[in-house]
Amino acid sequence: MEQTFIMIKPDGVQRGLVGEIISRFEKKGFSLKGLKFMNVERTFAECHYADLSAKPFFTGLVDYIISGPVVAMVWEGKGVVATGRKIIGATNPLASEPGTIRGDFAIDIGRNVIHGSDAVESATKEIALWFPEGTVSWQSSLKSWIYE
Ligand code: DAT
Ligand code: MG
Image (cartoon, rainbow, N blue to C red; front, top):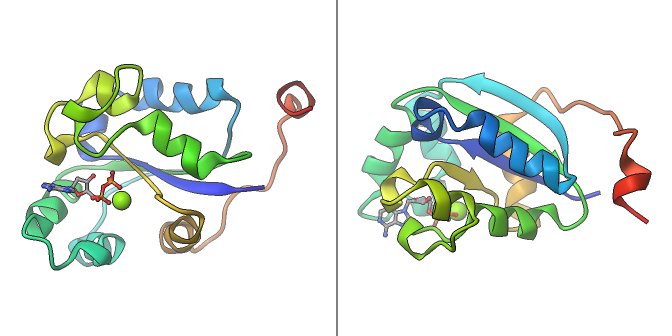
């Protein structure tokens, strides 16, 4: 079963959106497999966003991610990487559809509340980076009510 890495960024935590965001993934039917509330160090944030290190906004992005605690999660389910991105919405919240997390709760691209892996391959890398200790192995008793 596919897994994705989801992180509620410091603004999402400060604005009290943790429960709302978790609820959207839960209600969809995806399964929570890992959850940590943590502060990240600069070098760790730089590693997470290494692909963007040449971008002019990189330093500001890293400053933002380390500005307060984040909620790091692993969610599992059929198609969870692509569907997770749809639940999150477009990178620029002003272009995100209403009904998406960024569309409903954010305005500026540099305060867009949440991160989600953009491909199965990056999800694997991000889960290994954020959850080196591994995730929780369990199966929801609702599985047969969600999958046919
Ligand atoms: P996403 O988070 O939708 O996967 P991304 O991986 O391209 O987007 O970029 C990571 C984060 O960097 C994004 O959530 C917000 C920030 N960012 C992206 N493009 C930006 C830009 N043009 N100006 C400022 N911040 C930007
Ligand atoms: Mg990205």
